[in-house]
Image 1 (tube, helix red, strand yellow):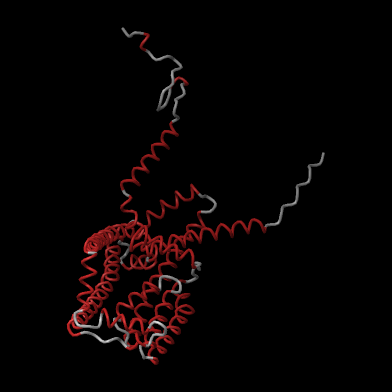
Image 2 (cartoon, helix red, strand yellow):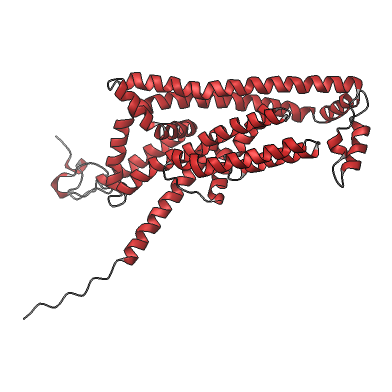
Amino acid sequence: MTDPRSLPPKDQLRWLGAVPSGRVPIVPLIAAARWLLLLVVIAGIYFFSGFVVPVLAALVIGFATWPLFRDLTRLCDGNTKLSASIALVCILLFLIVPMLVAVSFALEEFRGWFSWLVEANRSGVAVPPWITALPMVGDWLTAQWNLHVGPPGAIGELIQIVSGANMGNIYRAVMTAGGEAFRLLLMLLFMMIALFFVYKDGSVLVEQIDLVGERILPTRWARISRIVPATISSTVTGMTLIAIGEGIVLGVAYWIAGVPSPAIFGVITGVMALIPGGAPLSFTLISIYLAASGHLVEGAALFTWGTVELFIVDKTLRPRLVGGPIKLPFLPTFFGLVGGVKTMGFLGLFIGPVLMALLVAIWREWLTELRGEGARPAEPPSEPPLA
């Protein structure tokens, strides 16, 4: 027989689960479920934190290109797998082909620089006229050039001195650069895999996000769900595509003007164009270089062409491409670029400004809502009911 002393008392508390006979658990079931869900989310963030950057990049690209993908899906008779595969191939071509072209041009120009260094080290090199013509520092730079660079073999001695004193730092820098390049390739691979599933299952994902968003923010989700796609599309189109176009157009202008290494300076101008005021700074400095080296006509023509091209892009192409852009102030754009690169590497160059644009857009929507509430007329007090 069962010992009655081993039975739990009638009012003893239980930890989890349904409690019969009116007993109350120490931890309610709903609270336990919430804590368990929180622990699962924390564990998921810990284990999958390395995939946050490529997934964010895939979401940004998916949001920005979703209208085109929707048209492509319609052409494929609603086959999302086929349309996602075609879109992924197009994205690969869009990313890889320009990168390969830029790398090939850069390698060719680096090869030219290396040949010039070898020839200059063997037979010496005279001071360039534009260095001598520089005001205030031209004479000092000329003397330093004749002492450390101009004589035959001087460049080799200078490289030997610098490399011998910093061989460990150079080795670590090369190893770090190799590791970062491999890490970037892995991130691009994970991003393309995530992008495929964003395209394939994007509609289902949007429905689930809308369901959760309407539960969390029932009064504001309708506006926020419109702001997010418009902001991402505007930021990616306005900052990335136009920056690439400006880099190509100004790079061709550099080549026509006779600027040395026009491909590298075109890539630098394209990257600088992501920052407000970066493209004007780039072609202005190169125009000053041309003018200081004795090519006044080329320098003036390059500056004029850059100014006209920038005016055309900002006043005509940018509003048409962006379609009602969200004007970002300089400081949030700068913080988005620097913070994105610092925390996410190369991909942060695109993700950082998008996140800052989202924050600014939500902040403006909130202010607009508050001002609208403040402008509403006060309701007159209701009259007391008649006795």
